Image 1 (tube, rainbow, N blue to C red):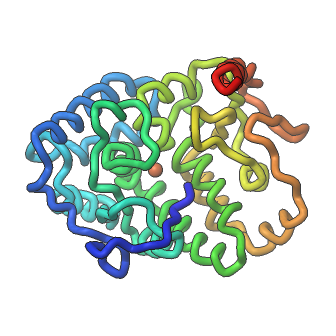
Image 2 (image 1 turned 90 degrees about the vertical axis):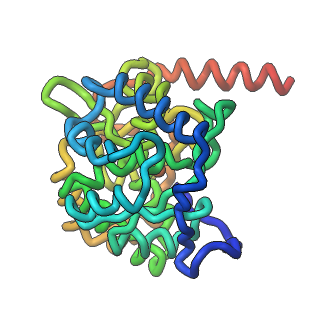
Length: 293
Ligand SMILES: [Fe+2]
């Protein structure tokens, strides 16, 4: 995800954080959280990585509604040493990576309106907290996120932010995991979305391809609709190992002349779980063409 914006709002601190101001949420806003929470927790068992369900309890706080970060952070700190901090919206890459490298996850404080219930342009608190926090309570995934933050700081120096952003996109946001009884979702962009939680696993349209670090770093992605390709990891341990053990500097150099791979493209070296029909994406493109004609 591109965490890019240029002007820091006056209410934000130099590290871009703002107070969550939990007391100012309205009853409707709390009700929206409870509705989304209930809908996803009903849908996810059997679809989501067990580690996500194990981490979900961390969000069941002493009062219903939008989690109060003060209470949430006390529990998250005990579990893995992570905290959640509120920000006004997307933040610059340097601030984003610095927070991750120091085990702070940045979260929007606003929640979607009823009109936005299934489509949002910027991540809201439900995406950021419901989608991301349960796995931050998992010790291995928590280490992966910190390693990613440190990798981001280096990628900035090496001019390779875009390559690294693709790794984040195809793991943290839209990753799949190979479970004992089939594929499971774990990416926050999927688990916080009612429709993509089904699409990513069940729909014949998208490709599902075994995770390969170099391949992922060459792959374009969709920001406007369901993904056309998902990458499948074997375990969080394996993902962490590949991230920590690989020296990314020579990897970026090796990829300098490499062509980007399209969001729907399959290449010879791919190990496929499923070759997507791309029927969904093609139908959408067709109807968009008709609308603009
Ligand atoms: Fe996210």
